Amino acid sequence: MQKQAILTQLDYNVTPNAEAQIERVINNTAGFEHIEKHLITLHDALKVHHGFVALSSNKDYFKIKNEAVGEEEVALVNDIIAKWASKYKIVLEKVSNKNTYYVIGYKS
Image (cartoon, rainbow, N blue to C red; front, side, top):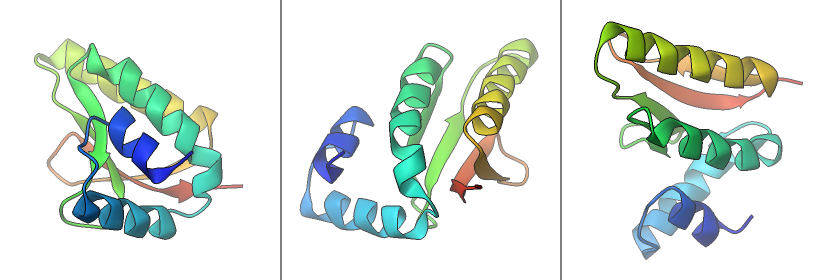
């Protein structure tokens, strides 16, 4: 998938800065070719639950953000994320004290 298409599907405007950032993120994500199509699917699935996949502003990683409201909804979204990562063998790093995860890479 082209970088511009990924940006568009993650609801970003295609700008030179965004293209440079996604290039860094892709290069920093181990096994990205095994992950990319699944990121978009997860992003679409999380939208209805107030979650999304985005580019991190702090690190060169994709991040998965859970902004659900209420304990049950937050737990549901966290469960969706955990099952997704397990199914597609994706390594996540949880950000402490937040319902946010960095996508580290693919574990073969």
